[in-house]
Length: 107
Image 1 (cartoon, rainbow, N blue to C red):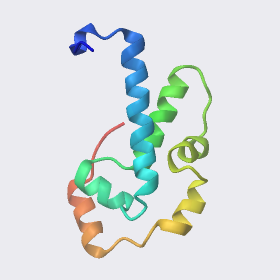
Image 2 (image 1 turned 30 degrees about the vertical axis):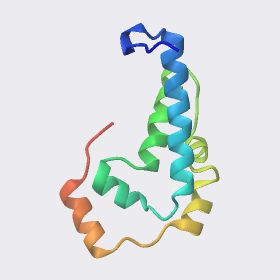
Image 3 (image 1 turned 90 degrees about the horizontal axis):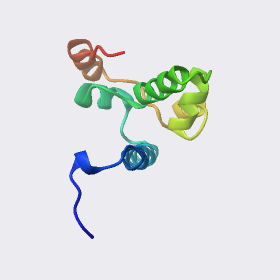
């Protein structure tokens, strides 16, 4: 197997690999229910909700009307309210303070 550089990938290959990486990231986040969204936001500047918003933005940009609830279910693997009830803990004062200082600004 010969090694390709990023510029040698076809557009189809790039899309295929990006989709595979996205699916793996989503699966990882589904398995790591111990990692709270606020921790992701404080450390990485994005969380599961951000990822679902970006997914919805891509769908809407392609002319597909995808709701916020539907895009969240794609990322969480279940309705968001169910995930929150099963896995989301109340944020600590320290987590909230860190979020206020580091609150990411992205669209």
